[in-house]
Image 1 (cartoon, rainbow, N blue to C red):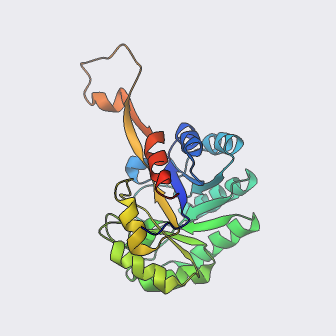
Image 2: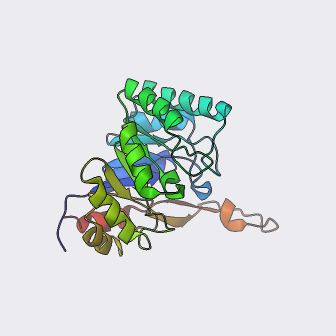
Length: 247
């Protein structure tokens, strides 16, 4: 396998996970909350503490709720306020995405967001709302025109393995004008084939494992025991094993 220089971004939904990822050798954090919902914007305090402790780049997901990427004016105002907060806290970038009803990129609204981020000297990633667009290749051109620096995508499929052919085509079509960063379903096991097939330069993943809580007392009368007495966070060994394959 050709050894490309790969930048690894870890999606972390807690400060603890972000610090583990940094220790394991990640280059950048996409910081969010509520991964089971697909990720939403973390709290002000979480961003503040993460920024104060992380030395690697910190990009914050700006998503006011789960669900679709069609936002009303109130939600757009919330998104703008969150971007402004991230800029004032010294974040390196934000992760955004808005669509119109017809599945095209909401260029008018997104341009406002990109300009606001740039006013704080922050970079902008367009997230996997991209995969819900009606035409991925036209959406890519629109996002390039907006001034975003990268697109997070699974190629319009559930996982990067299913979308690898499309990802490869997007990277070729982009021709260095924007970074196409594959994400969704990436593992240390399938990453080498994905790298070889697509020629990617940046890779995104959660690389999480489930950990049991240290709580001794457990109320067995309550259902959903695993939700209360265990949690997922970034697995340092998974990240280290993946990075070894880049060298």
